[in-house]
Length: 417
Image (cartoon, rainbow, N blue to C red; front, side, top):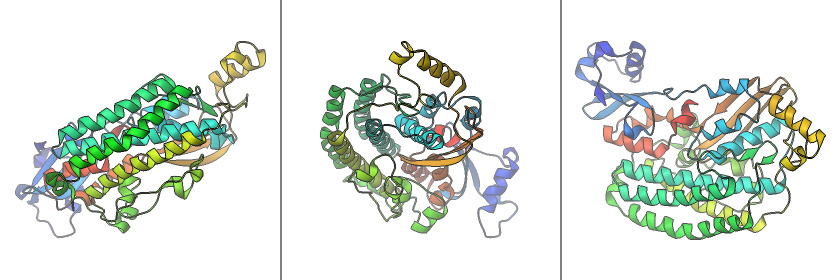
């Protein structure tokens, strides 16, 4: 963080800070108050996020978040590659839950193409999504605890995430950027011994979470740093477009897995954790409780897992199996056309959203009937959650800003795209 001189500041940003207060402000306000740069290289901003803070002493009077430092043009890139080629780029959005991003994008393209993956593929996709939710929330809880001074918890939560990354490795051969989904299914099936490893992990998880909660929930420093800090009400959360745990931490009972079920979530028995306080502590509680519900869902998925194929048999829309490509001319031709020119979905537009760990991840796709999107827009939950920062940090201390950012759990790769 550095002191920003009046003459060095961008006039539009300074004006935004001044306009953030409704009362009359004197012309020499910048001589009496401090304009502070927090980020974009500050470790507590969880990435390249810049906050321009207007302070009275150490109290935040106004805040202007500035995003875009990690902008890579992912939405524009989609217009120049076919639907299948774009799958690896979805790994790099919320890079704490790549399989969940893969699934959301694949479901959007399948909705556009009018196809549906086989039941076994959808069950495995659900399992991957819930493992991603646990892994993402573990990092969120550990990073939040570290932001307010508790390092041990961060190491414990990374230990649990490491177990999930090992499962990713066994399932699809990659620990981090998995690129596991395909249009119409999955890259490969999951072995029975790997499913047993998944069950072993979820069977021991509750005990490990209890251990983490015993360290945090009775810690006076942790509770006082979060309780009553960064409060946003039920109505404000809706007005600002909050999503995911940040929305449910303000008492709004909305989860896309319940509201508009996709895949087989309608057959799963689970609860949606909701807390009414709307503060940073409530957002932490939501995430911890959600991981327990994910464990319940995974147990049900493993119990109900059907047998069968993991790729749809639709030659002009779905990649054929390798054994068929190497043995039959028709499949070889289909594979050549799909890889080089992509599928040709009907003209039109669709929007599909999934309940990702951070909230609603949506893909809006416009098709002209070609092998690549005419337009692709990503509704990223980190982006919409960060826009609430001016409300959340107002009236709090600079040190509280760190805790509030951690409670939102943003990933800047997803916010900036």
